[in-house]
Image (tube, rainbow, N blue to C red):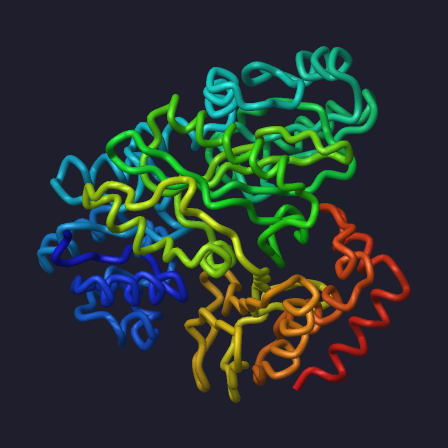
Length: 461
């Protein structure tokens, strides 16, 4: 087992890793920008190192600074968290070359899944179901249009090096493809430094389902069921739950088994998440794979009773899986709401000082957060402030518990999206489990939804 882990991240995920390390008896090193000097992850780590000014590229994305911090503190492993360098194959390779364990999969796995075209090719070879589309990148709008006519409109253009909805455009008719191609390519260059695009058929009312896989260094792979991530805005997830009401036991078993076989064939190691689109007929299609811990991992932890961050660390240290697939049982229901420092109507980021803060509690309520009273939400980083997670014996009880917890959450001095969550969880289609990835769009466009949102804003403490 490792003696000291440096956490190459900030915020709630850095705290989450510190807690897991402490329970394993591992010392921790926090890194921070000058703006994060008073952050909770800095206070709770055993050691801390300042790695640069606030801009991410000068601190949390500064590989030489991170490696220097690991060297001077004699850390023997680095946990990247999520975001920042967590899916950067070069960072993982440099760690490997410097004899520092990277807590995650091997660099070649990160590199393979980091390029969406190569990931689709690997998925095809591993017998994962794919939507019809181009086998590789398309060189221009004319080639994209040829594929679109072959597979049928509507289609979606996606950045080969992308994620998070950047460089992604839906095209419903041939005349709109040239402009969409130019816009998507420009976005991809701006976001990823790579304008390559590929094309695939667009599913009108998909659900976003992901399967959590866990693999050791000895060839054993299991899955921990699914998470439903369909409540999202501009491809950014807002509410996640497990299990999904859209999956029958048979479909859950099928998706899990297909995912495990694919990871065995690829030789994957550590934790990872395979993301699928589920259409209205119950057919599922590979979308992408994330080779890191997910923001929404707590819902899986609560329904399986397995600490995923501990598993990550133990697997990276070479320990074999201690469980078989038969040992995995999903019990109860968990829901996570991402609490962001943003306007609940426009979703614009809202950094600033928190003048009053009181997190909800009670049976079945968990809050993963780096916020506290007088903490300043910084404008340099992601607006995620906290994750509110509830667990209950069934979905209706979990929804009511989440509504209760959201009503108790006090954050003053800045705006948050708590009123949005209250409106979303009161919506009949969410309560009934009859929703897809366009849920937020419909909610905010409906008179009932906007009334609920206004009411929630008025009632939020």
